Image 1 (tube, protein in one colour):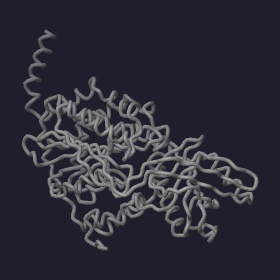
Image 2 (cartoon, protein in one colour):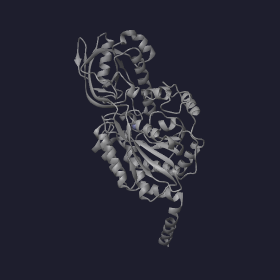
Image 3 (tube, protein in one colour):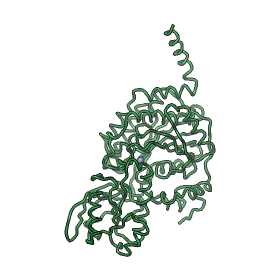
Image 4 (cartoon, helix red, strand yellow):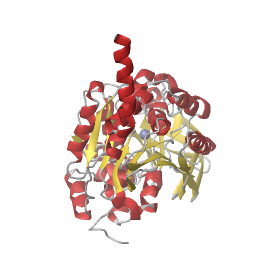
Length: 495
Ligand SMILES: [Zn+2]
C-alpha cells in the first residue's frame, strides 16, 4: 500500500510538473540541490585559471572557458567585446624606506591605475593619520610634493561590509585631500595585519594620475613610530605597469529564450574578473560559478521560462563596473524591456535577502519570491540604492534592480587580498546560495509583475537623497554622471 501511494504520487507530480510554474521551481530546486559541477567550476576558475584581472591572459582564458562551459550546456552564448578607456596591468613594484637611522624594503603593492614611476621616485613620507581635514590642517604645506602615509583601521570579519564601505570612504577623502594639497602620491597602510596585502583600485579609477600603493601594516606602523619620534623618513618607489590608453575586454552573455514574452528580459549577473594577489574566490568566483550552474540546471531541467533569462558574467567590474556599463550602453534601446537586473557580488556567506532599487511593487514582488523559499531563510529585503557593483548602470538608467545581500562570513578579511582563495569558501553554503539565487531568477522570469523605469528626475533625486556622490566619485563614476555620459541625468552639464 505504501509503495502504491508513493508511486501514484510520483505519477501525479510527473504529470503536473511541466505545466505549472510551481513545478518548474521545484524541479530547478531539486536540480541545484543535487550533484552539479558547481564546486568543480569554482575550483577550476580559482585554482587552475587563478586571479583574472581585466587585460591579463588569465582573464581572456577565463572568458573563453566560461563561454565554452555554457555552450556545452546547450545555451546560446556570445562574448561581446567592449572598449576600455585605459588598460592597466601590474608589472614590477619595489620600495625602499630610509631615514638617518634605518633603511628597509617593505612589501609594496601599487593600486590599479597607479601612475608608473619611470625609474625611481623619492619623496618624504608625511604621516597624515586617517587623512581627515584636521590631519591635513596639522601637516600644512609639508604634504606638497610628499607621499601621504594614510593609516587604515584593521578590516575584520566582525566589521564586515560596513567596515569595508567605511574603508572606501576614508580612502576616498584622504586621497581627494592629498591630491588637492599637491601630494606626489598616497601610500596606504594595509588594513590587514601580519603582512597580508591586497590590491584595490585607485580612487577615481582610470582618471587617477597619482602614485597610489599599499605597504604592509607592520612596516607602515614602524614608519609612523619613526616619524612621531622626529625622524625624517623618505620612500623611494619604483613602479612599472603595462598602462595604455584603449584596448578591449569581453563579457560572457548566455541566454534562454522565453516562451510567452521572449522580448522581456530578466538579467542575472556576476562579475568574473578579479584582482590578482589572490585568486578571486569570494570575490567573485562563488557567484560566477552560481550563475553558470543555474543557467546549466535550468537548461538541463527542460524549464522554459515565460520571459527570456540572460546570464551575464561581467568583465572589468573591479576596474570601474566596465563590462556591465558597456552592456547597458550597447543595449540602450532594449532597456525598457529589461524587467529586472539582478547582481550577485558579496562573497560566500548565506544570501539573506536583496537590496531592492526601483519600480513600484518591486519590494513586494521580491518579498513574495523569498516567501516561496522561506525554508532557506530568514530573508529580509531592503529598499537601498547600492553603488559599487554591476547594478550601477541599470540603476542609473532607471531599470529595476536587485543586489543579493549576503552574510559577512569571511568576506571582509579576505577582500581583494592574497588570501581570497578557494579554501575560504563554505562549499555547503555555496550550494544553498545557488538554489536561492536560481529560485529568485526563475520567479521573476515567470512572474507577471512589471515595474516602470525610473525617469531622469527620479534618478537625480535618488542620487541626492541617498548622498551617492562620494561613492560614485571613488569608483570614477561621478564626472561621467555630471557630464550626462553615464546615467539619465536631467541636469547634465555637457562639456
Ligand atoms: Zn566583487
